[in-house]
Length: 291
Image (cartoon, rainbow, N blue to C red; front, side):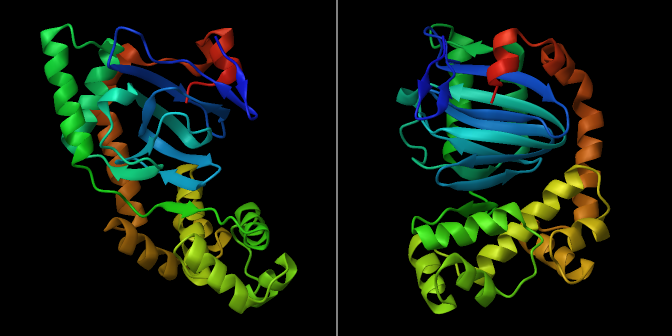
């Protein structure tokens, strides 16, 4: 059963008898799951590809080895870059009270990755089954110990700052001077700097750097070469992008996505039983998505 709430679709995923429900679904490049929300908290993980999650509060990029935590009731949309193998856990609110109350990108350790994939084989974990109850506790312990990752952009609340942010989000590769963009949004650069520091905790320059990094990652996931991704995202040189990528993720773009390819091949057999082809989803899933 689905219903509208403030323009977002209520997508009921949790099962009454379960503490954790799992879902595995593959998506084609460019697929967009429309605005929706769940009554349960959600861990969205891609074992292949890059996802971009957007809510009213901001934008989060989710490459492989990362996941995004989405609290219950948070309306969001998900856009796929490249072919995406999404593996999702839905957690009953009562069992995740210690997790953040806002969306955040989290690091997925090898153990947490295997726990997510294992849960997707069973679809639901109930506390009435002893083995499943132990698995629930291990998953929760791993989630409570995860590190957050700076692959996100908070959205400002001020109308002028929001116009500035929306302009750059629509054109990540825009290289116009910040002062000019601020003026077009209706405020001086000095005023805009104050608004961004107060409302998103970043300077204008840092916010745009983060946006460019996230855009380049999406382009790489879609198959772009490093040079093309860097220049299209607004970097002056590929080396500037490589340096920023290394600072954020601890490796080079080429090595990161090459490692993803090896992991995908090594784990493809173990994931196959629970894969759901988006072309074969039910009419309801095709309409409302599965994110």
